[in-house]
Amino acid sequence: MSKKKHPEHVNHERWLVSYADFITLLFAFFVVLFASSQSDKKKQVQMAAAMQTAFDHNSIFEPHSRQPPLADGAAPTNAPPAAIQLPMPIATDSTVIEQHLNKMFAEQVAAKHIPFGSVTMHTTPEGLVISLHEAGFFPSGSAEISPASLPMLSILATSLPRGPLRVEGHTDNLPIHTTQFATNWELSTTRATTIARVLLDKGRVNPAGLSAAGYAEFHPVASNATEDGRAQNRRVDIIILRTPPSSLNKLPQPVPDSTPQVLP
Image (tube, rainbow, N blue to C red; front, side, top):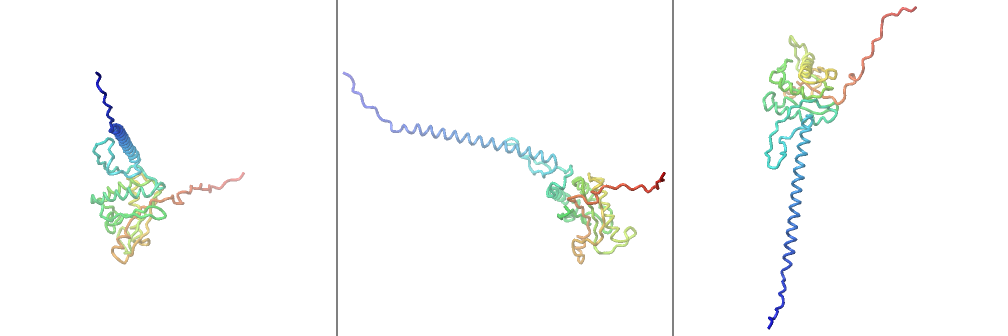
């Protein structure tokens, strides 16, 4: 006698298998997305490092304080700021030059080579003006450069573009009369030529694009009624000109021969 077959039990939880497969596929999909994003991020870091290296090589853009790591988990290295070696043309962006010089001046102040506030900068329609105040560079009534400021002037000379540049000497309105300087005209002119000489000797300034002049007390930037104002007026301005002076653009004309000609 055959056994009676029982009806098959219907499994109402078969949907869990499909749901588990879907969750597994979804998890794998997000893992792939995460891995791709990490790979792209690594490539971006490598690209940023390559661009930074290229810019630093030309000494045009300011280097970052830290170099991005090329590999995950690598410790960032502190890269010291590179000295500006190549001349930077003012025609590209004077703001870039100003940023470099501001950083350099701050380092010189921190090293106590020059007093705080002895160098100021501002922009005029002519170009970027770098003011070297007397307190940081010259003894009172003298045109001899202070020895402590010579390292800073050497770095400044290598940081300036080849030209055109104009160096201007200025004084306050207090009269001077010494064996070397009869008036403020002589003092301001000698200080300007002294700074110009340093720029020529220590830097890559084009002599044909460099000029120096003394203006005595007649171009003040502050009131001479106070000591602070007079201290601001005693300065030497280095002007990075945007365009060459018109006199530099003129070609020398041939001198006509004054020798009398004998007609046949």
